[in-house]
Amino acid sequence: MAAALINYEERLRQAVRFFWRGRRDAAKKQQATGKLDQGNRGAVTGGKNLDAFRDMIVDIVNRYAPEGSEVHRGKTMVVLPGFFRPTKQWDLLIVFQKRLLAAFELKSLCGPSYGNNANNRCEEAMGSGYDFRKAQSEGLFGRGASPFLGCFILVEDSPGSREPVSAKSPHFPTDKIFHASSYQQRMKILCERMVEQQLYSCASLVVAPNESKSGDSSHLSNQTAFRFLLSRLAGHLASEADLVGASRTRIKDEPAICESSSLLAGDWFTSIETTEGSVGQDTVPLV
Image (cartoon, rainbow, N blue to C red; front, side, top):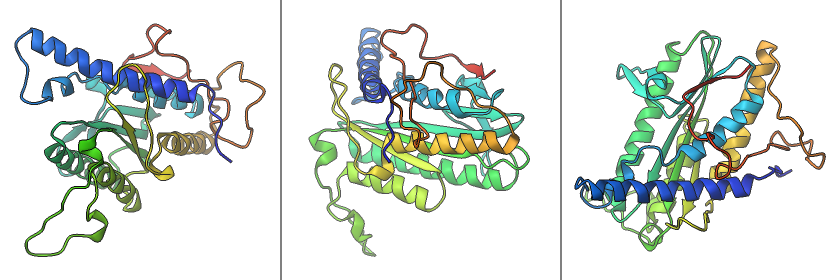
């Protein structure tokens, strides 16, 4: 049965609006200081544009992680050891009693230059996922740790990302799945295959037009929907809490109309546009 998330759709719209406003403000700031980079890079380097999506993930953590878990968002606190490299900085870490419960990578793909950016996103996501799993196999994330690894990608919905593009290979034929595929479809294939190959526990793709007012967005498949990522995370954290016999944090005053069959039923995603201080604390212990 589909999950009935209270306020989920509106919170998602707010997150999309927050993303586009952040890119716009970062570009204006760099232009005003005379440090505008080539192309559209000025908008990308704002750094915190995806924080509202990250905080939706934290809402699920606050509900389902074992009490006493630590939520890390600060730059110096989201670093993990690697296998092929010394360390890797992630976007969000959940730690419980010196065991890693979950880690997340959040990326975006925006125009006007989709080609190089798409290749970079693919290489970053695949490399980070493979390095993470090798480090996990070496026991670098705590004894017995089996962490949830999530990937989130927001792709700008525009003609440049929707139109089919060629995939030329002079020596050997390319995989037919990529023939006449768009950059949106290629990101969907990336997400699906990274999960199939067990690099990530779940990979989500949100497609959104560059509009700072509407907050419209869509997903290309149920398997890569952001809602599905949140549901998979909820199940993982609930299992971790049961494993250690710890109680879980519950949101107070849950509406009586919730579907009891869904892990996400009754989640209350509070407004980030009306609640002060909802985007950003670095480390939050769940007590």
